[in-house]
Image (cartoon, rainbow, N blue to C red; front, side, top):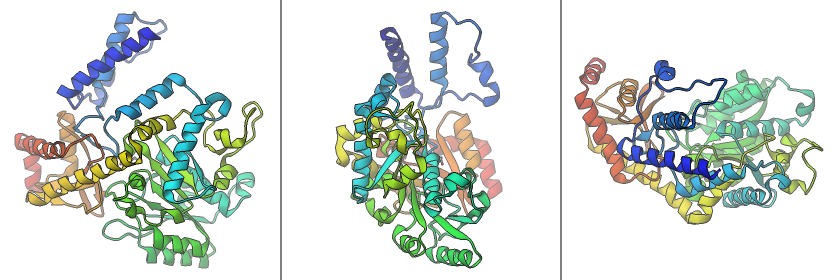
Length: 462
Ligand code: ABU
């Protein structure tokens, strides 16, 4: 093992050096992938030197998500304390279903979840778990909502008139999860939004009334804390009143920006969070832990237990259910995603997590200020968002983003709202400085100046 760890250090050191010179990895077109890197598997193994070579090649050619040139998705950066926790979790290789198999690591997970519930303002009845990604935490919320509506469904199968409400700006896991949970994609209602992409509470109330009148059963409302494209926050408090009046499960999908929970400056964006039934948050997004670190918490842990527990005498052989976390989780074998969050949190404290979150909003402000000050740009974003959406010189966003990627300049994606399509520049990497943000724009402008084919597109579309 020591030899292997030395090898790991060697490869990672090579990567870190290369990243500082080349923040974007070599572009490997998908159709050339298998000719570019030897990924083939054979009956016999290969000599160690050859193995080291191919492994290094693979690592060096993989997209670089920790550098100051990666703004493509809703994560980025490399937080050393969190990386340390995740590397230790790999070495320990505990499975989080029982105290017997994970020991003190169970305590790590429980402490993280307990502290998240405390910050929400929930009491002793609350609890949560980790799942493999935000889609799955949303799925768990939907299953709890379904079972809370009708406790017989988990034994006898589904009914056909349950209805889920969300907006078009919410995550794509909502219709997928409606299919998985037996509610059905056709029973997802898309509530109209305002100009910022926030759910219109009056329209929601009207849709619920209409559905009740026609024999439907409103079962769940999904709100989003940080919509996937614009980063908008649905208003929780007025919608929680509607849900309480009709006894509807209220979930807040905070996968992207739910970590404002940790910030005194930005927690107001999820005002009323203590009123909801369940809340999900991805520490691998705003907090910057390695993927994945997806948490779901429920105001009443009874629902987690009701929907996800199952006896298994081969598994649960010691200790109380409180310490056998398999009784409230989606999976059986489950990796330790809590440790990387705990190592970071332990080392920087809740105030340190707040600084990480606040800095991302400050970087977003720097980006918006730059765009507003330069007439070649059109801004689509608003305050209190870390998704900075813009167009530059009216160049189609998808052509610009694809060229930047293929020419190994910058990784940034595009999105749309209504009929507008734009670059979505996400200031989520808290290791970036304000200068990194300004450098992004400088790089983009230099790139366009040198790529005549993009300017031609600008003329055509303007
Ligand atoms: N939940 C991941 C969304 C991916 C993205 O929009 O970057």
